[in-house]
Length: 136
Image 1 (tube, rainbow, N blue to C red):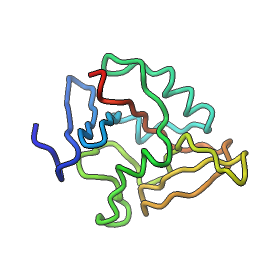
Image 2 (image 1 turned 90 degrees about the vertical axis):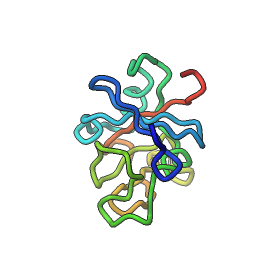
Image 3 (image 1 turned 135 degrees about the vertical axis):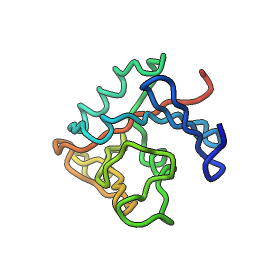
């Protein structure tokens, strides 16, 4: 498949969808539940760590540094995720990064405005799991 913007490649296999970033070496889950599921921070981490998807069990909740690689600030507010992703909400998505100055908080990225902020870990936010490409 042809890379979009030179960075990501959608890969459609049956009903499973992944997005591959060959430059960063990341694989992103892109399925309808990315728009629907809401988890606390602990639940989000556990969800990704327990995930068996697309033939792999090495998924994790991305760090703030990892998830910002799929933010596209050139797009309109409400769509600040790179082209190619089909299943997302213009809403906050958890990262695995704890807020250093307030441990009961963790960072999230909002695909509405592309900005990172911190939130209480007990709040329910969206989740998008990732893994490394090298074991494909």
